[in-house]
Image (tube, rainbow, N blue to C red):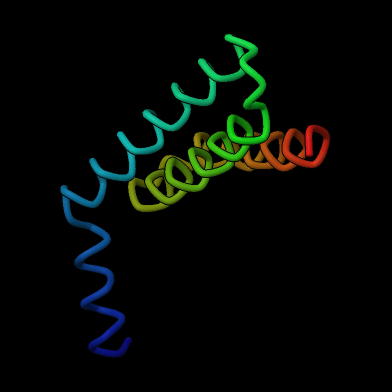
Length: 88
């Protein structure tokens, strides 16, 4: 493993990175839920936020080795793509 890969690994393993990915994913999922539930006409934005949330929580899941959550995020990301395509 190269020195650069080791450095990237240390950064990705940091607590700040883990918490940032976790809570950014949570915040974007909440925003998605509210936009869809309130039916304000922002469905494309809402489903885009679902996709972004799935990416963030998916990266967090990989770092923390939560593979069940990672598996779930694949389905959320796919649902986000379907939602954007359907409403666009």
